[in-house]
Length: 141
Image (cartoon, rainbow, N blue to C red):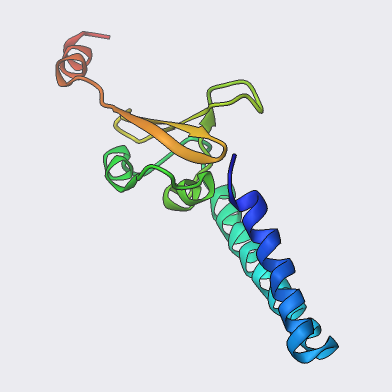
């Protein structure tokens, strides 16, 4: 179970309680204002990431090799979408765990990412074989 599900609300309640104990209702108003600002910052970031991703094809990335080099275990899906500036192609049924997403680049190299609970667990880079590309170009059409 993720600690963030309990840690963040507990920290907010603790902060509100301490601010009430120290400064009364003006302290609660200040603490509540800080919480609202924090939520608005995260919401604004999420909307910017999704706005950038809306202008690109689904599952497209400029370079799958560079994406593979930048990925780290534990990053969120939102972070990967921000890096690729594109929504990944969902390979699993909706709301199934783990979730598999794929991004492809112009050279047909792909990165397939496995997310468990919204966090990156594993990923795999698949590059097209050079001889397959040579055979395809050598065959007459």
